Image 1 (tube, rainbow over the protein chains, first blue to last red):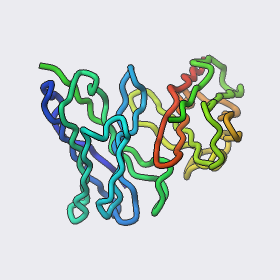
Image 2 (tube, rainbow over the protein chains, first blue to last red):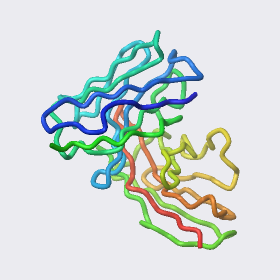
Image 3 (tube, rainbow over the protein chains, first blue to last red):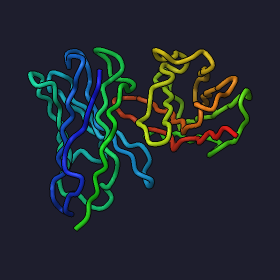
Image 4 (tube, chains in turn brown, green):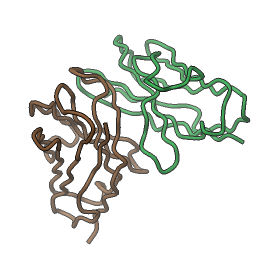
Length: 119
Length: 108
């Protein structure tokens, strides 16, 4: 299974960050699909997940600004993060839950995409 | 939120030596939802150990995990140059996930 992130590398402050993850080599069925970001300031930060059914759960610290959705026919899932600030500048990874039908640990990971919030 | 503190921050060892990495949790968690990841320079993290002590697919038996309660350890035996990386621990309790800040391992 391979995951690849895509989306704008630069986002204006107060705007919405939108990323898509395309999955190849496997089905979305039975797995949890997460977004995780990494920055020097905060380290690795789990953003949230969507189960393949569309059921979601978000990091409480980001919950008010985050939305994750799945598009199983096209083997994709997406992240929307609203009202971004410079604190949202990070490498964003899309990640599959390692264990089918269970949310616990993560793998495989996408290569990551750098998103910078700046005017 | 459970905070994971990793130590040491970095270590430098020679090939063939053993590395011992620590991950301490701010609260005891009775589940075995503790994992370790390896992140080589310029790459995404890779799952090494899950459920405290289980090696992920394709991970050599030089890597082992142990621990319980609040104290967990990743041991890397017979270090090889390819083991140069940052190692992170991760916990999952009550649908909330946190990561440690990592230990950087340098192979001399």
